[in-house]
Image (cartoon, rainbow, N blue to C red; front, side, top):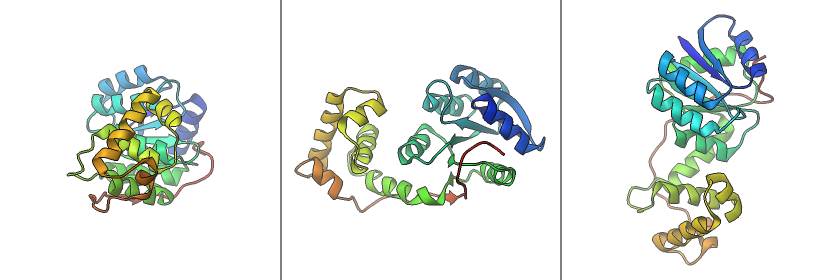
Amino acid sequence: MKVLLVDHPPTRAGIRMALGGSVEVCGEYGEVDLAIRAAKLEQPDIALIGREITGDWRAAVRGVCRAAPHCSVIVLAQSPDADDMLESVRAGAQGYLPGTLKAENLRSIFRFAQTREALIPRTMVLELLTEIRGTSVPDSGLTSREAQVLGMVRRGHSTTWIADRLQIAPVTVRRHISELVHKLGVENRSDLVERRIERGAPYPVVAVRGGGRRNGA
């Protein structure tokens, strides 16, 4: 099994120590472009991408997924963040794991990844299901961006926060919200938060234990 590590050097060292030579580390990088090139060249089975890498970690996830279509991409984070988890999934990641990665956890992760199962902490499963049920409705007429904005609005984020997160202008966010109000048949933004779309598609999730700091020890 070939593993690509995309994170800061101390974290990569901790993961290598935890692996103990049980798998082949085919590359270690801390920058997005280099990681994507390595993924295309090496075609790893699994890529562990740190949320705090230099550059846009979402671009790293998307790039590695495109460069190595059969690679299982897992995002590593220092602490749980529902929006980061959802963005990881949207970018193509198979898993999102906050907290400490111990040796036994890593081995379990590799087994799950090989069988193409999702890896989401138990504490975040409900958040993912709520997002899917609330926005993935085939006949709702929502675009993927509108669904993304809707999820953020329902989690209580401001227009400015959403604009910064999605790297779009606040006026664009307000336009999306206006369109959501129209499409979902509600009166205002507050109703978007209150109203839930009941229908939705099931989503396969495997919960993995984890917590604390992420250092691979």
